[in-house]
Image 1 (cartoon, rainbow, N blue to C red):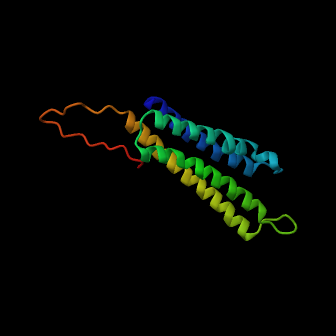
Image 2: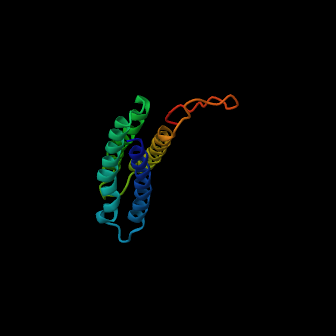
Image 3: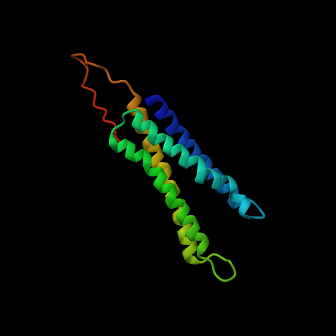
Length: 153
């Protein structure tokens, strides 16, 4: 299970990378319409949440420490926040449908939250990798005692 936890947490990082690519595709598609962000929406509303829940399940099955399991769940909450920020940003428009300053600020927070989610996913992947590393049973007399705590950093 530890190997699976490590692999799926790595796949989650790849999904986040594609999420940024799909956001750029939507931003640079001309003429821009709602379909321009379709891949970004599908990845953010389905793929990443499913991978996050799978990561949490595998962390628990791998008997990871509670902090690591909690860290693995955090991207799911950040994805929920992403959806709220995107909806709020679209909601702050003027009578003509143009963006307002508030809408642009909230849209900027949507991007910053995405960066935070990637950072958390990298922390989960690092913790998963460390959890899967073998630790020597007994150090020799000339070897230092290994100290590799499994943390979220």
